[in-house]
Length: 405
Image (cartoon, rainbow, N blue to C red):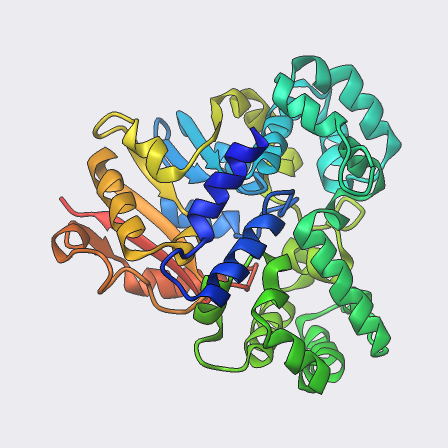
């Protein structure tokens, strides 16, 4: 299974027609990407659900990643969510979430497991309520050991969001910041958006002018921890120094949304969702949504698969909504065309496609055949608004396409 997964990831990210240096960097990223990357997803599910306008009875095809959005979509009452991922750790995480949502005894235990994710009671709950109902492959993953020799399920007793490629990257960023006498957790003491901006301007903005930070962020491998492959690095940079781009994205995360409403900021500056009843959480973990999400969790089908291959095996006119995260940034023109031919074939009337890009513009014009792209209406003004309101703040563009009549 592991070797098959590695081959799928390599096929998705390695540019075989690129120069040797490009191919080496791509293969290095594929190697880094084979373990747990995202313990939580970095796309805003509230923006997603507004853009997708999910209606009862809809079938959704989505890339899973950390699964927060997959299970949050259940609030909108779709008939089925088919979630796919090439990463076996993400598949295991989503399977764990589905069973835990269904089997943990109450909302408090669910919140402790996935929001706090740092309590020994979670391990006892795993063995009592979750493990007996988990598929064998996922159970082997969670009860196995990581490269440091730790049982993976132990992450839920010691801070899951500090693990994985992204969690480790954020931890390293905190370490580098403290070496420069900056404590990222100080940001969480802000009481207003105005205070957030004062702290950002005083503490964080100058950090990106340091020579070492500018040099290290100019290396394409420096953002592997964000799940950004070399092919996406160039799109994110857009010809600008990467330190300037990152400062702009961090400024939006830090200053455009109040802390009490933005759990992405808590993850970035606090390495977790925070404690207490009032801290912001993804929709699937909110108490008012608990019973609906629990009742509907069985509607999630998790597949270890490529999105294009999954759609190719699906019936014509069988999906209503599609979510690609930022995966298209990795794709060649041929891969994009193959994906969108299957999307168009499987799309029902009124189908919607939502995706994100590292750069600001949509990447489809000039890369898809005109007759294929012409089947879809790009909602430009709405997309700009969704981009502005996406609390994760790390993407240049959030894009919505709707199938034409």
